[in-house]
Length: 173
Image 1: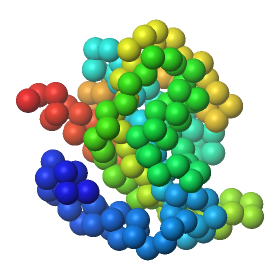
Image 2: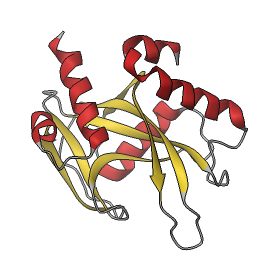
Image 3: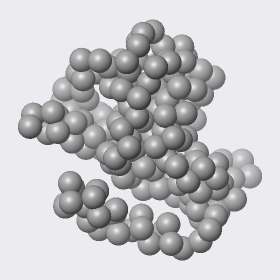
């Protein structure tokens, strides 16, 4: 977390909350941890670095980054890469080992699963081969979106706008 906090000092409190949650129980990487658990997501950028692949999420009914549950895997970069591959059908993807974003968000009760927190760790994933995706059953649709457009759209999810700002700042250097 120290590296993350050094890169994003304004998010020190968020990083501290994630570190505390990590230390709270051995089961935080599993769905059986009912108060919340770790998930991993991909900021999946195209070869030009100007577009990101988003999913129109089937359960949440919003355009978001690709991602999913850790399901016991403590290597969240690997989880982010796996989810990107599974949800997009893309091959030849590469994941940056460094955490890109942290986001804790509430997931409402659904069926027999009580409401809980997702502690989502996001990683940059690069498309290196074909960018012709395949829509999985987890999505209504997928689409490549200009990162500048996400930032400019007042209807974009706040965490999506934050990642767009981070990506643009990172690439302006």
